[in-house]
Amino acid sequence: MSLKLAQAQTRYPKAETFTFGDSRTLCDQLLALVRSGRKTATCGALRDYHSGGDVYPEVGRQDIALDWDGNAALVIETVEVTQRRYCDVDADFALAEGENDDLEGWRADHRAYFERNGGWSPEMELVCERFRLIEDFGKGGDV
Image (cartoon, rainbow, N blue to C red):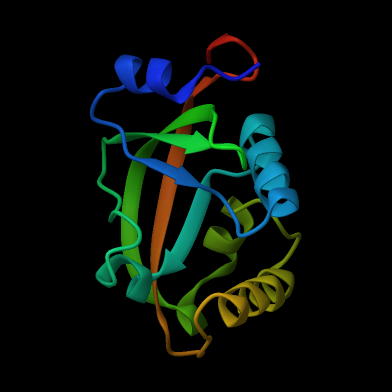
């Protein structure tokens, strides 16, 4: 069972909050991948950080990932942040996202995601973040 967000923010007062994905199903899948250790990276369109939507990740910051209902699900710590064009994402990063078995699958799924969320271009700039799991509130304790 997840800690209430207020409790998680008390434990991690400098943390930002965010939700993986753009639907309940995708959010649940991505949280499960993080919990399993398969997902250790994520990316977003750079435009979303400039528009005041997302807070730009910072190495060393610990952030609270929420479930679709807004409950604290887990805490991650950013270990690397890079910017690169969609067309320059390599297999190493794509596989670290944990959602696909190859770069081609990553490209297809992420193209569809970006098309649903503001547009896609092979030249679009992405913010690519690698992270480590710090705490999983669904498991009731520290990792």
